[in-house]
Every structure is written in structure tokens, then in C-alpha cells.
Image (cartoon, rainbow, N blue to C red; front, side, top):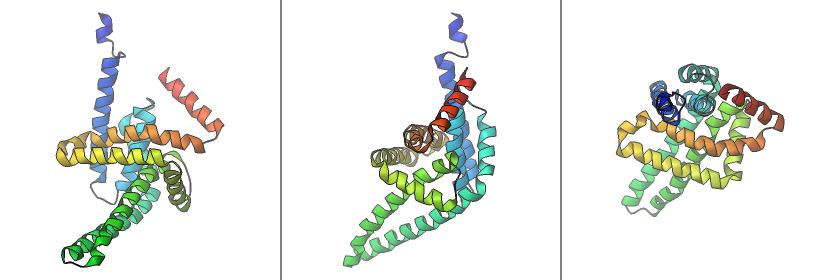
Length: 217
């Protein structure tokens, strides 16, 4: 009977994770409102999922804002580059669609630009988790994230599928934005961590696993 009210049983732990995911998603949405801060928010979101939601280390709010501040400069620079690319590609697609509707054969090129937009989104899906997990120069981050996405294509495509499903969920039921960012990132985390571990030394992996065990015990 006492197990029913034990805060460490599966039900209460699951409920606690759900509340944390909602809280984390709200933090992400709130800190992304200025638009130019989205990069820092994406980095902090992944960092907090990895450290707090997944491995029970620290507190959601504290870890989120600490990661947001510490990675703000680099994440924002990269995000502004990404944002410019997104705007250019989206604009090109819209212009080409107008040309196609007018009968111009060049308009069909919007499909090519659409593929480029998808590839850009997949690259972005690696960039900010990479910043959250590794310290490197901006140039190296841009390059390494692209290499990882290409060399781990099956996982990249799975991440793309998750992005599509959760993006559709927000489109159809906007209120889900209050939980989707954290849940999507949590599921993405399980894929990306398998990729990232390939590029970590055995010593770093062992040290991180030991730290996680200490917190859980």
C-alpha cells in the first residue's frame, strides 16, 4: 500500500518527468520569442534534456538558464547564419512557385530548393546539440555537425521524421507547443547521443557515466 504513495515509484517519477517537460518547453518558447535568441534556446533545451531530464542531474530552470547564458554568443552567431539561410531559401521557393504558376519552366526548380531547405533543417538539428555537448570553434562546429549528419544518415533521417511528426502536431494542435519541444528533443537525444559517443574518448564516456551513476544513487 505504501508503494502507491512512494514518490520514487514509476508513476510519480513519470509524472515528474511530464511536468519537467512542460516546464522546459515553456522556458524554451518564452526565451525564443525575440527570434534571434532561438539558437541559444535550442542549445539550452538539448543541454537540459541530457543533463536533467534524462540523467536527473540538477534542476530544469537552473540548468536551462545556465546553459542559455554560457552558450549565448556562439549559438546566436550560428543561428543568425541559419536564419539568413532559411529566409533566403524560403523566399526563393515562394518566388519559384509564382513563376511555375505563370507557366515559366524555371519555376519547377522550387523542388530543388525545397530539398535544400530540408537538408538545412537536418543540419540545424545537429548543430545546437553539438554546441551543448562539445566545445569547439564556430567553424569546426558548422563543419563537424554537417559531417555527422551525413555519416550517420539513417539516424539523421529518423530525426527528420520526428521533426515532421512533431511539427505536424504543433500545426494541427497549437497548444502542444507547451510540451512538444522537450519531448521531441528527448527522443532526438537518444539518437544523437549514439552518434556523439562515436566522437568521444573512452575516458570522457566513462567519466560521464560515473557522474550520472553518482546522481542517480
